[in-house]
Image (cartoon, rainbow, N blue to C red; front, side):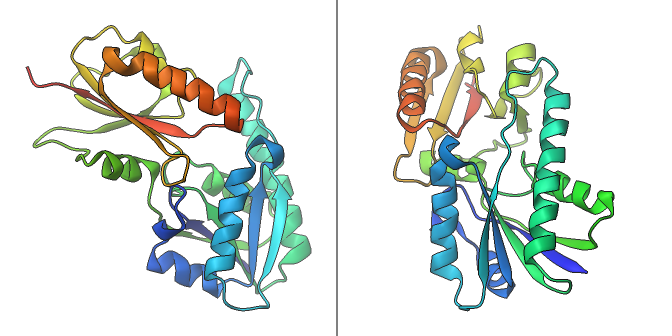
Length: 254
């Protein structure tokens, strides 16, 4: 039996590591790093920095796995994600088999929290379902970009007696602001879906690269700042080659 820890490492700041996450990382015999290569090298750099900062035992190995690219232009989004997870599961199975002996404990460092819009749990479930390896999974929660966003804007995510909904940019672009919900967190928005919303009573609290030296924050009336957000978003993506951002849309009080 191989034990695999999925450790939430926060939104980009090594100080986001919880005490539980540090202890879990220090208990591992091997750390596996899914590297996107030139597509987003800084994501791997942060993980390496966390490894070097918190791993104290000299015998702990670090194995880098090439993270297969995902087709983000596919017509069938669900099929594209399923195909990507299968290829990921194959790569992870090979790395665990080759580098982690039976009875060992390996750890993946997961951006944010493994339980919120992250594929690591599903990918490791595929590894287990394939039956090639006997793997036990443990999940250690982390600080999400949603929490970091609220903290950096100095706001509460919730208001008295009101629901909070978390959705994707794809859903927001298709359905608009959900009925009956005045506070909506939007993640995985590759197309700036907020810019097409017709409502005139929305504020936006937007952040990119949260917890990193490149952090960008913009807030205000949606239609007063949407051009600024899009311009800064485009410039940052061109400069860095990738972007990770999220935002809160909030209907103002009547």
